[in-house]
Length: 194
Image 1 (cartoon, rainbow, N blue to C red):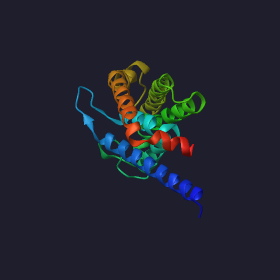
Image 2 (tube, rainbow, N blue to C red):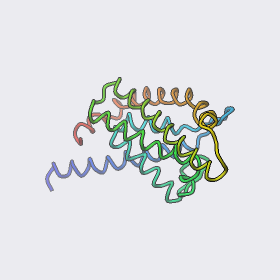
Image 3 (spheres, rainbow, N blue to C red):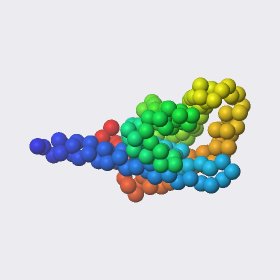
């Protein structure tokens, strides 16, 4: 086996390790619940952190692995839940929305590069799409299970209380990931393996 093949194999292995660690970070951040009037987790922080540090492709893969683990029954979602039932429940759309956030980030990065403005715009648009998908999902499931509910009510329950905390989490993730990247050296690795 030549050095080139060994390097490519090592890069693939390293990529899988980064994806697995990203999925594990998402699970840990799902378990951390900040007690406020409306308790919230650090999932949005982990999603943004993974995307900025690992890049769109690997960050999105880590989100997908996290969702698949949860769907398979591993208790990786908030409150140590898991299983397909958790995804099909009212808040499952927000979890699936993380994947759309990743895909948006990946698309922006692939077409516009990793400039700071591009990263921030992709994270913010991804959050809006996550909120939108999750809210529509919540309304559909809630209506089927319990009865009709208004958009304003659902926004008051599921979005409005989280906007400011989620923006703070995204900002913190962005700063931390950009500070860690030179230490970890993932940018050099991404350039070699892209």
